[in-house]
Image 1: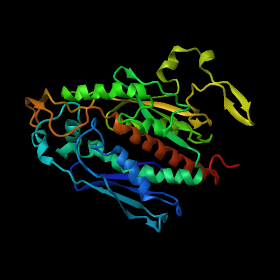
Image 2: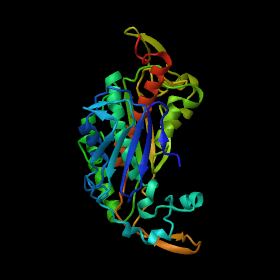
Image 3: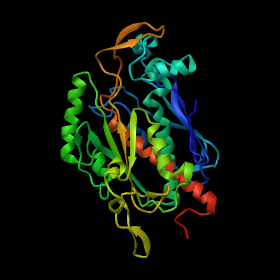
Image 4: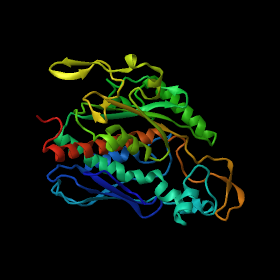
Length: 366
């Protein structure tokens, strides 16, 4: 099973949804980087269950334990292991699912691949696996702050079903997003989105939507041509997240409606720097960052678990029906915002260190 991500800044996540715990081992982190456990915990708190009235009520403190790799608050250059113990386990809620495949979950496909699966909460396919990613990204963020503190990575809920927020990627702030429990930068639309999620949850149903993300002040030169293009790495990172179904960057699919004359981003010298006067490329050209804002969007499907009877089959290949059990999000997007930011942080940190290894300096250094 592939549980490793990154080339220089490498992470390996472990654990199942209802096992003893989940976590991550980070390898390739440079030595002497100041790391704050409080910053790691803050990011975990942003993605933890039970944080508001519109997310799953599972009660987990998600307390991070750093087992190795640090001394006196500084990285040693050796592997960093972070563990979060599971404390609110209810595997009994999944007894029926041990013999029945949940529609649109990974139950059948894991059985088809491995001949065995962790039925409780989906095991490795559960979004609880992303705890390790968020913890690792909190460390990566502190690496970025050491080498290039100006980089900003901010994500927000762009839409839930047809409800679309009006958010300016150039000016939206972290505080704007965190000011409401749905995590959108549009205070007016936030209340409408919250009411939609509540109504859907009360009906035992679920909804999906789109998360948008901006990376500001990214230096030019990050990304590797051909197979490791920066947008390809971002796409892989985002589509590796549970419930994702689409990725687009810059003009995305709407760019297909334009001509080349309309779509091209003209270059100009501005304040002594090479800049573009438009940004339909989304901050990346030829797979390499060009110094403009990197803007992308990620589509999330409706949560697969719904509280009504659905047709399915058993592990012995008999037709049957199954009704959702357990505790689940009616909409994953509010808790997915910090996870999208985390994956973008991991990609940028890896490529910043790859550029440093290639040239002996980071891309922004002269």
